Image 1 (cartoon, rainbow, N blue to C red):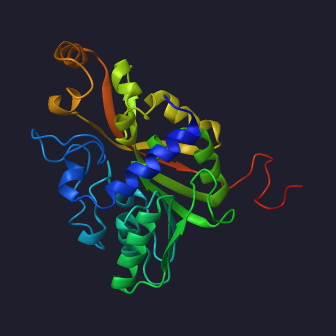
Image 2 (cartoon, rainbow, N blue to C red):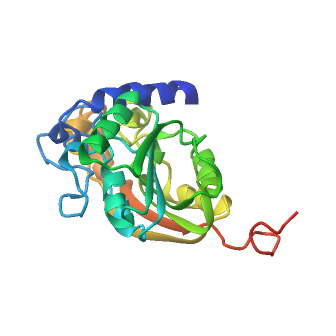
Length: 281
């Protein structure tokens, strides 16, 4: 694959295009990237439509879970959404946090930020804002968030360790995250792993499930829990763009699996030095 800078540029360009694609096209492909499938309508996304705060203008069909439904958001919370897209998860978080809450969406695609801001303005929300920035270097101060959510975004970031490090910095002591993402169990066929569109499509950028969980632990989080897990089936008509029929058959018969997981973890309320937050020298 390409280096980190090139991969980020690839994702930025692709998601600039995806911002203007119809929801049905995004949901019938892998996170909006690559060709669409005629076999099934919804490859990765869960159904948001029954959640309070859902806004159809903000739903681009790009998620792989419902992190806001698992995030234990409370009234008045400050919630940050990583890779906020057109604002869907932010608006649902706002419905829970209420008018006294504060919702911040972060995205590094200008078209998505513009789309999200327009949606917030139409809804008249003055406590939802969208900031342009890289989630490896979040444009927010430390110890500010009660909850961080993200939906099918970290798999698009080459250096996932840095993102979890930033999440730890930005969360308040004792605060938590709930993140939906794509992980692997087994090795992807080389052609899929090398395909740029499969990277932008949330697949070849995914890492092994065990390695993903270890990154969370290595960054100091506790109470790490998988809240939901489901297998992702990529239809043959999408796979055929990258691998041969024989390779598709071998892939289907292998033990390799692609999964959407929703993971919860907490930043410890007590720092490693053993005293209350803020008292350590």
